Length: 205
Image 1 (tube, one colour):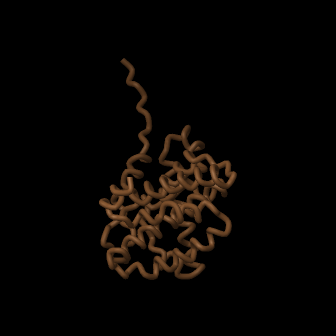
Image 2: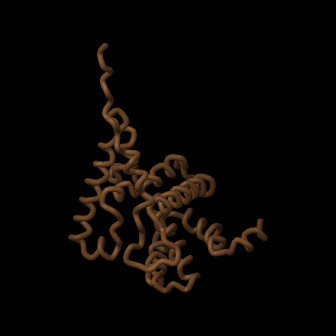
Image 3: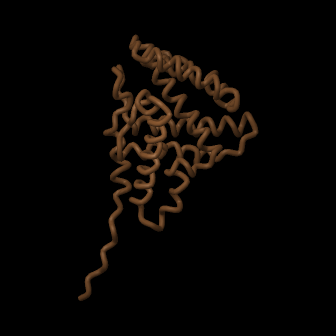
């Protein structure tokens, strides 16, 4: 009896499932440790919300589900080479360019770990240079918002390691508000409760 031809196995899911092992804020003390899987999940929630706000309040035409999907995979490259902290990654323009090349290479490695017939579907989700600019801007805003919320939370726990992070990201958010009114709406509507205790949240339900 002839043997059935075995299919080539994909390592894509195995790489994605290593996200919980990748620590964020590696050079800083954190009251609440955070990994890339947690971060990506939160960015997906915020990106979805921003898309809904944009469509309902400011005449946008963004697909919230696609925004959330792109956000889930926006750190896919880190499954290969880990999280590079911002002070290192952006130490100077030359270093930033080299790290960008590494990230792009890692994204393509992730893409190529999929079965070939699926790669065209994931191409403009995983490879960040090919993500639609409107979605890329929204996911980037969500990424900054999630990091800002993290900084505020650490400061609320008297961790002054995050003083400069809150200041730097606050300035970035001020810039984003100029082009993305949904960011202003998000900050006014959702940010205050993110610092509330569970008892306070329960009382406000």
